[in-house]
Length: 178
Ligand code: FES
Ligand code: FES
Image: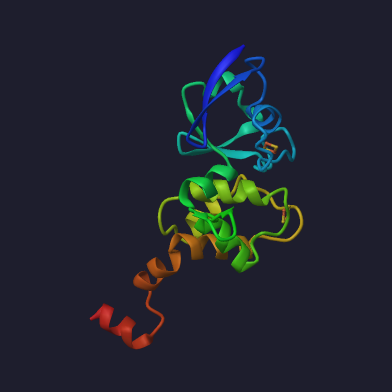
């Protein structure tokens, strides 16, 4: 079946069985291999993409279902927000991707793209709890979540928000109480 999709802001045409998993269409037909397959059963979040801004497991979505939707993959995060750096001729990373590198949150190649895409669907300046809940469907089977949460906080400005909520300087806290 011929389908017109919108992926990473571009119109793309594919000729695939309508029930083909979006994950496979992205990887096999569109060459977007940044989206990974972990469990293939909707349990791990490795295949997370944004569909109309919502984080969704692409292993559970038939391609037909996104024919009228906007799909964003890990490649689209960098391309949509970054700028070409002519001197080195490469795409500038999205702030979440940069923060994952800086904070040590990019731990393996399987879970990281899904974690970053899921984080991109979080509200601005999320609390640690909002980050935990937002990434609850993204599993790390090896290293742990602390550096990932730190990276998301750093990229999305959560530190500034928490500083406003509970100033660390006791004098400042007293001022707020007064
Ligand atoms: S591969 Fe889709 S949720 Fe695990
Ligand atoms: S599964 Fe990717 S860092 Fe653990």
